[in-house]
Figure 1 (tube, helix red, strand yellow):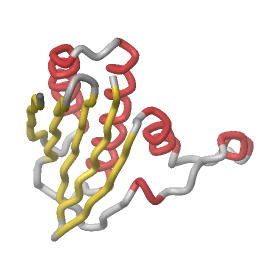
Figure 2: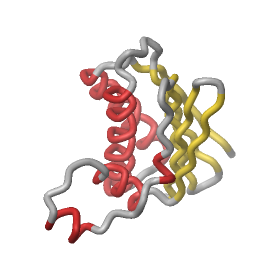
Figure 3: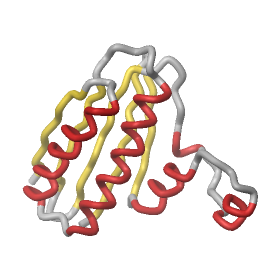
Length: 137
């Protein structure tokens, strides 16, 4: 059984409230635990905000879809038009001790996504990027 839903969101930080409402509806419908909801919300927020910040000159909306495949697989896709595609799956693993010791900035959100999601993939074709994250519930 596959259930799905998608919505388009404006490229604005104040759209996060609407993103979270959409996620909450799907998470409740799909039977996610409170911890799973928090992890999904955090990861989607990180990707969404990166898309907003790093593609601010684009006017296109960001599409978010949330699907449930089978009994325990939640698939979250964020689709964006990107001038400069950034493949988050190709970033180096973060050494947290070194990160804190050297007071680095940036990259922590991607590190969290890699830790909290069970699968992550990136595709880019003809100016459109798609980040897919999978969470097993």
